[in-house]
Length: 173
Image 1: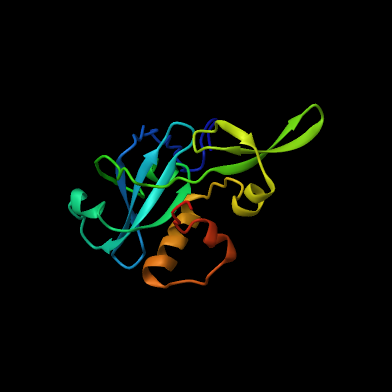
Image 2 (image 1 turned 90 degrees about the horizontal axis):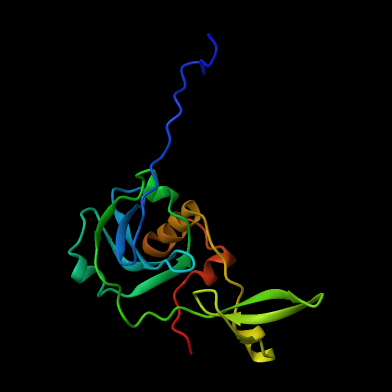
């Protein structure tokens, strides 16, 4: 092999796709069908929902977003960038999506304070005892984990894992 030769391997740089709020992508479920996810917020982190719909062909977007939301989570766009999750269009997300507040630990004067934050990362207040019981820490999952959770929820394939509960969509009370 000559200098700089990588033994037949070619390095390919993925092109970063700039996703926008409202973008919808198709998530392969492994059986010829797709789950459909929508970016609903990208101001602080990328927050996606997955609708209670699966299909082998891409649905009408206006009809798709009328379906119940079954998953809400934060993830990264690497599967969109590499083409595994193709973008299928853009439509305004439903207006009545309840994005939960979260708790985070923040150090102030050498002591950890638990704060309530909104989905944009804004500190709202110091967490009460009730907040600490009711709210969870904000988490992000890998796209591969999100695919597995979608398969479980839409097809019943795979084993339930306790971490999945945090991804299942619940309306704030």
